[in-house]
Image (cartoon, rainbow over all chains, first blue to last red; front, side, top):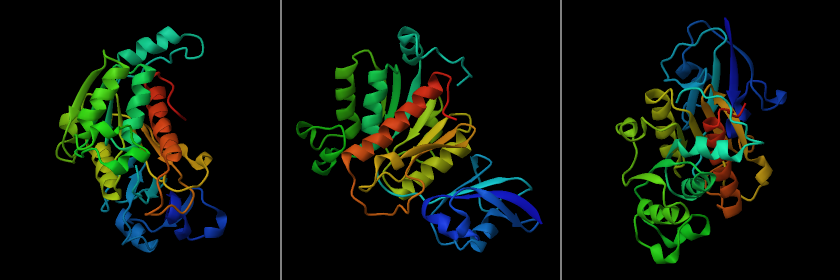
Length: 80
Length: 207
């Protein structure tokens, strides 16, 4: 297992495995070799339009996550 | 942009104006966010802007965007250019009248000091944010989401999500599509986008 820092923004925050812990980023354990895409599927976000950042930069779904990575998912919403 | 020493913002208006006059900001989208952010940047003294939008002025824009009835039907970038030059005749302005995509973003925005995402569709935001992060990783990026609705404007906040990436918006509420766009709340987000950009230009980026 490895531990990442997971941040789910706005409506995605209801998908935290421990939603009772509030909306902020938190430590999250995943299997070695987990990709962004696999994590997204685990969180039930596979069909959601999203913007993915890993360590402050956009990351594609085939990016393999590493210990300590900061992973953030944003639901883009229209309006401007 | 190279790192800059923070300008003594509290005590030296001339130094701030001088720094901003040499600076450039790119704005993708000239709607409620982009047109108002552009106005605030020009009034603050930013010397160069690159603004892209492919739309024309419509009546539905008047509730929050910086356009006027006598500009109906004109390309937004042309109408906005006219208004911005009335505020600051010496402004160096480049207008781009086409849709910004992954294929052309670097061509138009490779040389700006800060880039502001100000498009109005969710798909557009995904494309611009991803492309900017991938293709212009050294250009500070400010983007926005979650500004619609009648909720408190205090909910619209700035969050640093990368070394040089900031997101503005109501990031905690369960924002969703289809909420009304209120001028005052949209302009809070536009002002935050402009101000985050200005703080980057002054060497005191939002923490």
